[in-house]
Image (cartoon, rainbow, N blue to C red; front, top):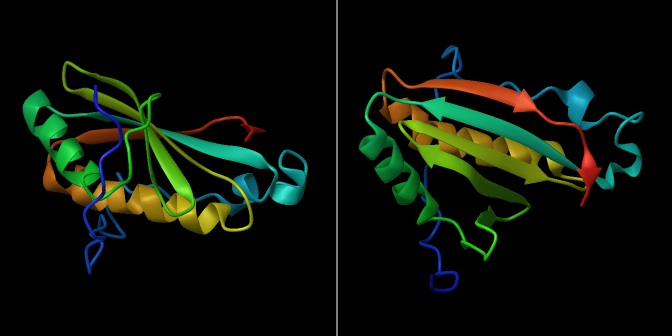
Length: 141
């Protein structure tokens, strides 16, 4: 596998799922800004997205199209843009599992930006795609 490629410029308009779409991720500020679990914002916040779609090729194609706007992939499969990253955890049989992560002062904004952009660029374009969102325990970054 070759090294990271240069990204395409960020689109002028970032696509998003509609505000009332039940597949849209809703940032839980009490989780991400938790003083108990993330004091000083020094830990990494990670959200897992598990997307299922009836057409595995379409899902994979849309994911690859979206990642053309990101930096990467790194050797461990991470893509990144600004203050957040996305790592492909699984991609098979019409299921795509991704980890979105961020840390620091802009953790909520950058994490939400990446998730909403992915959702609009991939999930919104597959009418019968389903997604499950899971906020994972904080880890050291």
